[in-house]
Length: 116
Image (cartoon, rainbow, N blue to C red):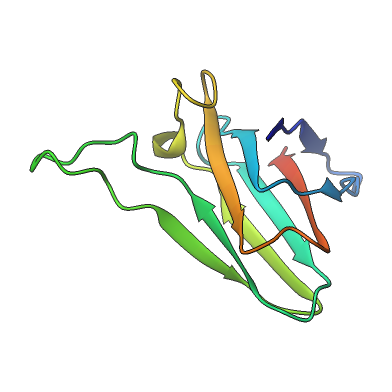
């Protein structure tokens, strides 16, 4: 697992730097409106990127369901808004979300970006 660094994207058009994704990554959620996890996949198979939500308990006492996104194969790119509700202060650290990639992270890169 890795704690990913948030990169600020400015009006001048700064391009983020992508790094290899881990099976489990931690990412800052920021203010909940302008921070995104950006995944790219060059593998021939799709991947699933999941935001772990089981730290939230529903009024029924059940865990809130995880939020899963499909990352397309070959040239897939996925932008996931990192909402404040995604923060898992116990597992990931204050103001951070838990991001999972399955079934494997081969050929998957990630950047955490903040707009503005």
